[in-house]
Length: 135
Image (tube, rainbow, N blue to C red):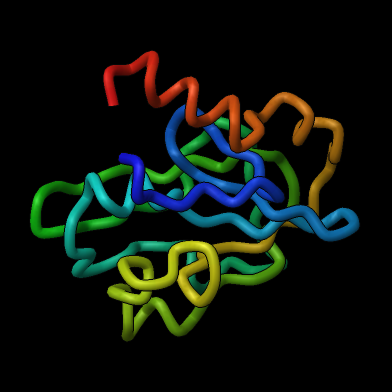
């Protein structure tokens, strides 16, 4: 795990999603740890056609990610309106493997309660969480 990257400007969930906050918008993706555990990502099922029309709830399922090893559910780290989905992942899901914090982002959520971010883990807390789980 020592070579994995967990940027300090992001917040993390126990289900291994990350959040990058800009104003009232939260960009969401999966952590480097999750990417490493999954192995090669082969497809992603996101709410492709729901931008602007779907409310997401913190902790609730919003999609699935399939890899050569397993299928994993994706969970919203914060509540709000889905405003953007990374369309490039539809044809190139493997981008998550190479750039989970950049081009591999998944969603942008207009947060209904920005204070929810304070409940998420910092990078240091996330690393401690991973260690406490035996990783």
